[in-house]
Image 1 (spheres, rainbow, N blue to C red):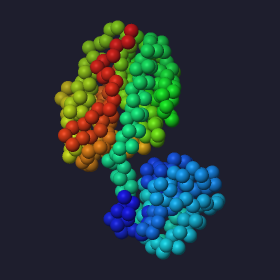
Image 2 (image 1 turned 90 degrees about the horizontal axis):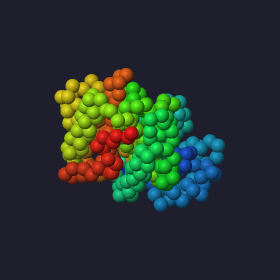
Image 3 (image 1 turned 90 degrees about the vertical axis):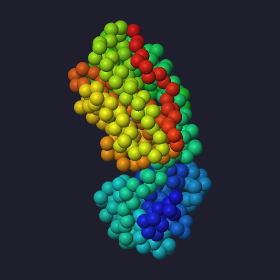
Image 4 (image 1 turned 45 degrees about the vertical axis):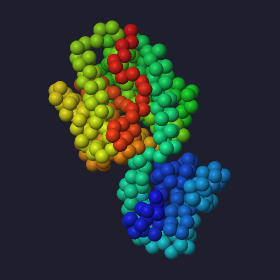
Length: 352
Ligand SMILES: [Mn+2]
């Protein structure tokens, strides 16, 4: 894969610094390291802390572990000189300006910005990646159904979040895949309402958006449920519209479809019901090692879906000061459709 990129963009080597790309291409799961892929061998550089783990992880992926001291880039520079590298691809979307200046000065080679060409290799998931994501989703599904049991009027959003996260960890997750969102009542109009001290009140919609890491891969799901016994017509109306938008979009997903066209399916439907201005974010995004990765499923999404890409479908309606609804599933793109990986019920759940 890396050789192909070298050929395509005509560079002698690729310098990898992004932690997710390092994990993907070298297998390294630690926090400190850089890699140099060349036409004459691949090298991974890290310090003594990762000597054993690093070597074990990167060698099966074709990288040689190189232990570095305090100035880790000196060893990279040695390799660059030794192999006569003249043109080096680097991750311009990942490095800071000052780090770039440092590399340019030290390496003294022509630096070529790779843009998103490494990330794009991660679009179509491999079998082991799909397995890990499925497991992460299964964990989140189970955490959701367990957590519903403790929800009642008066519980705080933070308590709900704590349950979701605790159960995910108990079921084998390494961590939550992002800050758990629990937004109740008027707060559910905040698309990213991280759990607060607010107590769930009577007759409120509650949106929970959360996920788990499993073997480095994420899940990402959202459900909105109702607490109380008297749902208003408007609460029910927006729930039904969002649910229908979610189902309509899922029906349309298939290989060959442009992401912006998929977004349009849900967006046009929500607009036709008069809530176009209340759906202010994209329909979805890719998931994998990162919680938000390519492709972007939005009006600007120009990537064409391919089999085994993994995306979220998460339409929403948000009405300031009133309430909001979002329903999110993770789906895997197939040749003639898609498979929804979440098993959680998405018909309106009413908790008394
Ligand atoms: Mn999402």
